Length: 457
Picture 1 (tube, helix red, strand yellow):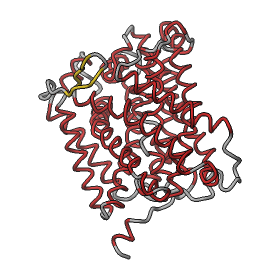
Picture 2 (cartoon, rainbow, N blue to C red):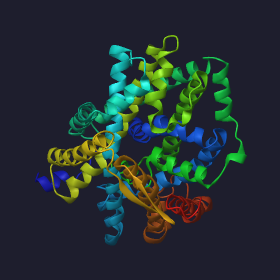
Picture 3 (cartoon, rainbow, N blue to C red):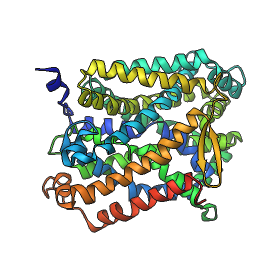
Picture 4 (cartoon, one colour):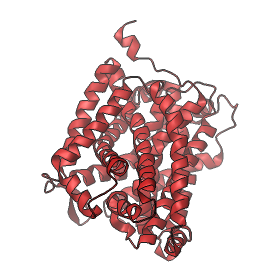
C-alpha cells in the first residue's frame, strides 16, 4: 500500500463503549475542573449553573450531532469531510485546525502544571508553607515550567503514534470511569468538611437571578464550547472513525450529559472546599493550584485527597489532549500526505514551540503583550490570555455559526437527516432541532462575539 493510500484511511473504534469513553474524555478536561468553578463563582453560583445547563440543552446536543454526522459522512480529516460535501467549504475545517492548534499551545502548559502538582502531592506532600508563592515561583521559573510541559507533550505525542483508535481507546476505557469515581470521592468529602462548606454548596446550587447579566451568559456559552469541545471540529474528527450503525443522537446525548456531570462535580469539589477554608474562589485560572493545594494540606487526610484530586485532573488533561492532537495530526496526514509518525513529529514540534513561548510568558516574557481591539479602546493581553480569548470567544463561536449554516443551507436537511438518523432508523430531525440550529445557536454565538469586543456588556 502506498503512503498516500495509507494516510487516507481512518480506523474504526473497537467498540461503542470505547468511542464514548474517548469522546467523553475529549470533552471532560481542564475546562470542567479548572475553569468552570471560578466562572461559576464569579457568575453568581447558582444563576451561572442554571444558565449553563440551559445553554447545554440548547447548544451542546445539536452541535455534537452535526459535527459527528459531518465527520462520519466524510470519514477523513476535518478539512476533507467538508470538501466531500462541498469543495468550497474546506475552510471551516482549517478554522477548526487553527483553533485547536492555539488551544494545544496553552493547554499543554497548564497540563504540565497539573503534572507537577500531582507529583508534588504524591512524592513530597508539601509546598513550603506558601502554596501561592510556590505556584508563582514554579510558573515564573523558565526551566521548571517548560520542563513539565515538555514531559507531558512527549508522553502525549508518543501515545498518538499508536493511533487514537488503538492504545488511546484502551486507556480511555479505564481513565474515564476512574475519573468520575475520583471526582465523586473528592466531592462528597468537600461537602462534609464543615458548616461553611454547606454554605458554599448552597451558593453553588441556589440561583440569585439578580446577578444575571450579558457577561454571565457569554461566559456560560463559551464555557460550554470549550468544555464540550464544539465549534472547532473535535467531533468531526472523532465521528470520522464511527461505523454507520452507531446512533449518533444517543451518543451526542451521552457526551453532553457526561461533560455536564463532570463540570458539576468539579464545582462540588472546589466551591464548598474554598468556602470551608475561607478562600476567595475568584482566584481565577490559578485557583486549583494556589488555592486547592492550600486547602487540601490543611485538612485531615488532605494529602491523600489532594493526590486523588490531581490524579483525576491529570486523567482529564491526558484524555482531552489525545483528541486535540488527533485533529491536527489527521489533517497533516491527509492534506500534507504524511505518514502518521512524521505528522505527529511535525505537529509536536509546532505545538512545542508554542508551549515554550506560553510558558515563558509567565516568567521572562511576562511583559510581552498582544493588542486586543475593544469597542472604544484597546486592551493588551499576554500570550496565554490572548490565545485563550481568541480561540474561545472568536474562533469557536465562528465555527458554530459556520457549521449551522453548512448543515442547513449547504448539506441540506434531507441529506443531514439521512446521515444522522441512519436513513430514519433513529427518528427525524425535529422542528426544535431546526430552530436551535437556525436561530438559537447562531444568536448565542453573535452575543458572545459582540460581548468579547465590547459592543454589548
